[in-house]
Length: 337
Image (tube, rainbow, N blue to C red; front, side):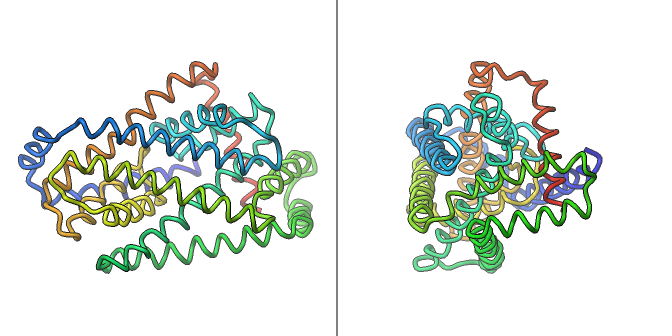
């Protein structure tokens, strides 16, 4: 935990800096007036579409896990929602580890397998968001900030994809390299559990070994984010923004790329940068700010409340989150090899 304090402080600093930048030029009275006059009935279809997109995320997760064990989409939906709840209220994105822990405890799937599939989910999401913003270039001018963001994100995500595809195609080489590192740096009593973790990682890469499966995963990821953009678009009707669907795609893509940065739980600060992105598209400041604040609440509150309910249904106690955190530390120990 002590080693994580710098990351926690960095996330706090970045969140505060982004919040200051997003709100520094706003007239809060105008923002409040926009919030009072919003047509909140549009939140209902927005929330419905959001949970439909979560259902398809659960289906994608099941496809990634199918090389290890088949789990129904309905079963995974509950665990995904719990994980999102954890990300919204816990530091260090422990929600991802929490759902890995629940899947291990309830379904017997190895922690290493689950965490690897979670990383692959984030990789597929990042690649799709980059494509969304690049697609928006055909219709909208891109600010210098967004241009740099897309350039950096493209290098990171496409580079990571190349690495994962290579590791998936050469599992024996990965085993040899990992065992060599373990023999050189890890005490003998710890090697066996880490080797088991490694096998879980290799099983989690199963979904990248066939080109057809990669295309299916990318296709469902595009569909998920098209639904996410639809949700953003529906919520925008509550405010006088008059945004086109493509504008919402670009804004959503850029904002969600920013949430990859360290921040407070719930992506506070990074998500609010959507205000500046919308202003760059010509949206009124007060309407843009009220829209982003409400949109962020729509993303956080319903899934967090449902996640708490489902956590009780699953019989998971808050004390068990420490066990999930311990597993996160074991995963980090392997990554440091």
